[in-house]
Image (cartoon, rainbow, N blue to C red; front, side, top):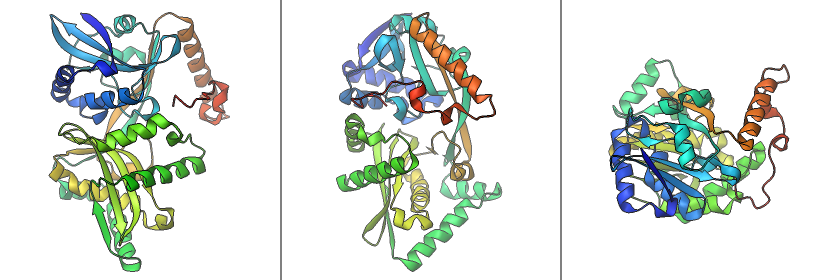
Length: 357
């Protein structure tokens, strides 16, 4: 197998077409994060995006997108923004990922949202978790019926809150995609406030992320599009969500809402409106992203196993990473709790330029 490396900016329309065909043929690659457009858009705001192009008998059989940092360390394209990543290849394609790293001149590739069924990475996975999704392949009514039969009362509760909001405040209006720059800015403002209040790193202090959101929101292709959904009560914006869709999968990504209306759960009202509109858009699933939020558990009708781990080649950075992982495992086994309770500076150097997330 021949592997050549190109910069993300060199991903031509012909190569993107080959990429899209491989993606369509492999059901595990339905997420818009696996679309060539996502890598192309990130490469427009960052200069460290690369793609390994895999060829066999003069035929392209796969792509390996990544962001390369110092000392041959690489992460998925989009860094912490990436909710799905891995090889874009035909199902069952035999690929030696250590040789892939060598061809890309990498010492480490770290992942934390890799589909666990990507078998070339099986021996490099440390742990896995579920990414819940809403199965809308049979339409919204069937989805609601299946949720009720499973014992979930979440949809009924959201319906009650919706009627209460309309009764007490005003008429609701939803736009599944609204090309509105002000709504996009409002989403980022609300989300930044949420990040600060929760003590989480504010993604929108990074200028490249803001620019990426703008580019994704403006992209409207049949195979890939940004979707900015909004919910108004009368003329006041009370909930907004920016996500991405491929042909059949919609990724629930950046939801935000007006905190004055929190008791009505406007974000969840908007999510169900999105689910109701999915069938007309050709969408068969909404992936809600990897975490154990209670509302996701109650609304999910299935989940995808995602793995965390790393591929390494012998090097000092790889030795350091393995030491860190061993230390994390040691702390997690102690009564004091998980490593997440330790300050980030315990393992990480700050980035004053705020370039990396």
